[in-house]
Image 1: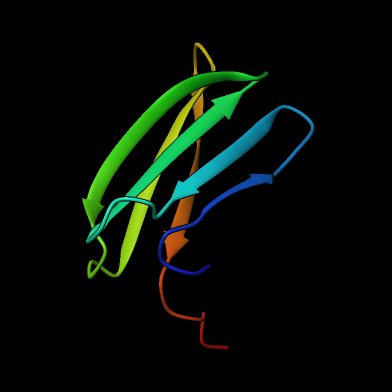
Image 2 (image 1 turned 120 degrees about the vertical axis):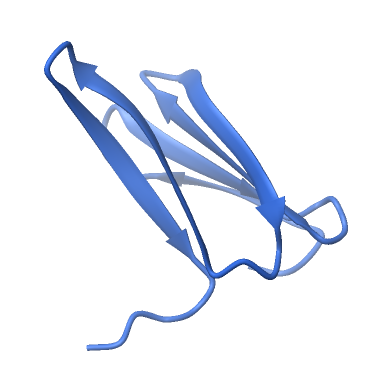
Length: 73
């Protein structure tokens, strides 16, 4: 992604994430389940990663990790 842009990515049939870099120096990550926002967090762009998610059912949850760097094998 490029600074000043916003991207929406479908992760599964029910889950999506929006990564918003339109505000200078900040990264806003919003997660959606079934088209509804279930969580949002804003961090400085320089932080290495953001972890956020939501409830899957009463006994479990799901999460995503948004990383700035490429994963190392």
